[in-house]
Image (cartoon, helix red, strand yellow):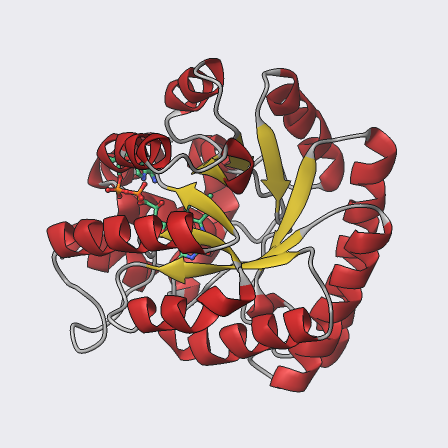
Length: 305
Ligand SMILES: Cc1cc2nc3c(=O)[nH]c(=O)nc-3n(C[C@H](O)[C@H](O)[C@H](O)COP(=O)(O)OP(=O)(O)OC[C@H]3O[C@@H](n4cnc5c(N)ncnc54)[C@H](O)[C@@H]3O)c2cc1C
């Protein structure tokens, strides 16, 4: 793992750096990856992406909430987002973090909060995906996913991370549910005891998971900007005659926008993950960690101001 990646991911947990970057960073760097600080900022961005033929999801940024009342406010905010998507006629669904909805406090609380949102999403014909966070949250996230499906909710999905050794077993256990899964490489700092440290091993695991999910899962979101893996998915789907309704590509707002549009022109569904909110610091640090060039660019613009 590159030293810069570790540094940026460690910086994601530094309150001092957060205060500094939060003061200056939005204009200087965060605006590239975040659709704005309010829902009103995000709506025109989502609409423009939709007008370009891209599907979108949105996330109110925030994670690791430790106060129950705050998690209720997050449920209220997302309810408003779902209603706004509905009235604006946007092709946008939700991606939420369970630690934003109380998972760091109590699994039952997170389950109650997320079920309320999944129900509300169903009432307006929408869908909600639970992101995957640090490895300590994986068991609870998968338990909540399973529970929601067993309770009869069909409009919910979650995420599997290729860098974790455990993920192939997790996928095998989920397949009987015909799960709706987003496959990602994984964005957090994880120890070599549980996660592949080498990029080539992560990429190989990604290809295996993607193939298994495409072939035997319900719906697969191939969420990567890695063109080799994207072409691999296209060739695999064509060869196995996997219908186009059973998968889509997903990328992040601000990352490889031309590739996003090229895939739309080639007839594929592409969803752009488009978060907003004032709590963009940790999200930005993870984006910087993914590409050392971003980190250097961002550091230079901070110093230049
Ligand atoms: C829609 C979506 C949802 C995600 N959800 C989760 C989640 O729930 N949990 C989780 O752990 N991770 C999540 N991730 C992040 C993911 O785990 C990776 O950290 C991230 O996608 C970078 O890996 P990559 O697959 O693009 O491949 P890489 O091999 O890292 O990148 C391939 C190429 O893409 C470009 N690229 C990648 N990242 C950036 C960037 N930040 N800036 C500029 N160029 C870049 C570069 O050209 C790079 O060479 C998500 C990613 C996407 C696209």
